[in-house]
Image (cartoon, rainbow, N blue to C red):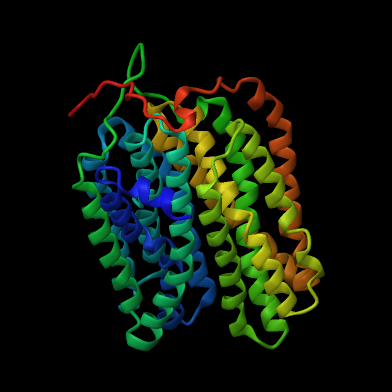
Length: 417
């Protein structure tokens, strides 16, 4: 089963940039919790801690596509170190203000800076895979599956690690680890020039304009906002459900089962040589994702909910992999990093909406009924995908030789190297 993964990792430079990307994006599962743990201790206010963390992610969601557009235009090696420097300056400022009992407005200002300059490492790594494996559709499918599996591993390990460091070592140790991962992984990725996608120009001019002008992306992003709402809502509701059952600490295990199911599905999904169009796989996986959350409101206890979450997790990775693969197939290379980042931005916006909506639903109706929030988000995702599905299938390009897994020469010319 692992043969296809060994094959893609054997591509020149692939293991090195994938490993660097794994280290560099460890903070995505650590920074929010690290901020909450630090600020809740130094200020005594969970409301303030949660608000600062939310501002961080909102700033990142809004600014990341613009940062990625600069990457497409000027290259990863030029933009990534500068973005990381600003990002870390904001993070250090936030930590300093927190421990020195500084004003709240400065915490929010630092959160905006660190979030806005937070580069989308996930997109940078996937853009490298698209460049290294250009023309090899099956191999790229496996590579995207590998990255999705690593994403799930990050969300299994990261929260446990940052919590241990912040509570058992030192209140700043969690964010110190975030800094370490960011510096080591980010710089290791930026110095790898051989696998860095070239800056590209499209016919008739430069790579100006937003990637959102491409129709498929405008259809995919709203779906991912709804999918992100599922993720944000479920994470909040599971905590409330476990607390209502008298086992608040079990929430982590329930969410870990969700991530584990996704990780296992990603491993399997990545080695299957799928036939047919990427558009059709995308529509099917969105529908399966929507169906996977339907049993959640009916779970009578924590054990049953854990089983439901484990099975539901099996829908996550295939849906994300098919979404990223479709973006790679339908968005020109000159805008690919930005296009992939818009997908992640959609998920981030949905997380914020889902978490906020679920919190209100819990207070009004209780945890079990609050699961209707992710159910509604899943149904919305399926409806939006179905509405745009006919157009996606009608405009799908014919299969190429690369779809069978054979190599084809890269079709671009380097600019700015």
